[in-house]
Image 1 (cartoon, rainbow, N blue to C red):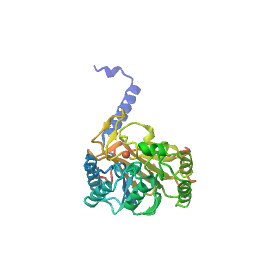
Image 2 (image 1 turned 90 degrees about the horizontal axis):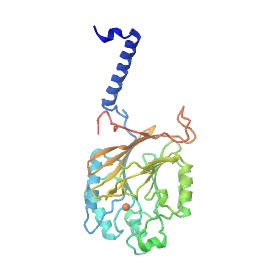
Image 3 (image 1 turned 135 degrees about the vertical axis):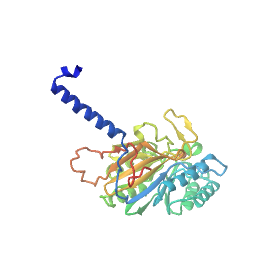
Image 4 (image 1 turned 90 degrees about the vertical axis):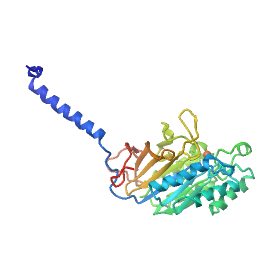
Length: 336
Ligand SMILES: [Fe+2]
């Protein structure tokens, strides 16, 4: 006689239902991830920070080469944004090395270059250092807008360095009132139904005018703000690397030259960047471990488009709901 003979019928029925639910849950957890999207993105671009091209010969140059080749192989993007620290010392020789790397490796047709703190490391005077960057970037201002596929790409940049820092080690970005006024009017004049992509090498913490900048971005929650500078591994669990605490979405880009881990131990082989996919109703951001040629599931997420003044129906929160994608999403049903 089976022990189940003594179990009341209703208990057995509940047990069968429970086992069924558990089995279904297990299957769901083990199944291949469903494609995030069946449609094609409107636009795909890549973001790299802190390349640190170096004319004296450096593993950093190898990292840049690997990054250009890896990102081109995963998706032939419309644009590549270099978010500051293009070079190690901001010298003409460093820029030549970087331009040779661009010329001899696959790149998108459009490369947007932002200024970082290392562009001021040549110590030939702030004005001269800045002009050297502008000459090789082919423009007359560190801040500028490009419209790609109908989307705003707004490059910001430090125009000056605190004198005490300049003499020692430039770190903080100084943004002029003119730049901040221009940012406010450029965002206000853009298409409020589309996300805007804003790039600055330094996070708000390292901007002298951080309060005004935060205020402008906060008034434009359709903004995704990309920053670099810290070289933090995108695998580090630090809420500052991805946050919407100020309504706009703030995203760290990782770094190409080297990374720091959670204990601030240097990872000389570290090489991280981002792929950004723009769809009609959301932006998908994927962290990329270029050194191992793998996506970073813990730093891959989607941001629903939040049309200014019109939250998604049924959503009552004050922030856009960022959703981590895990496991990594697929495109056209194919796992990347
Ligand atoms: Fe850097």
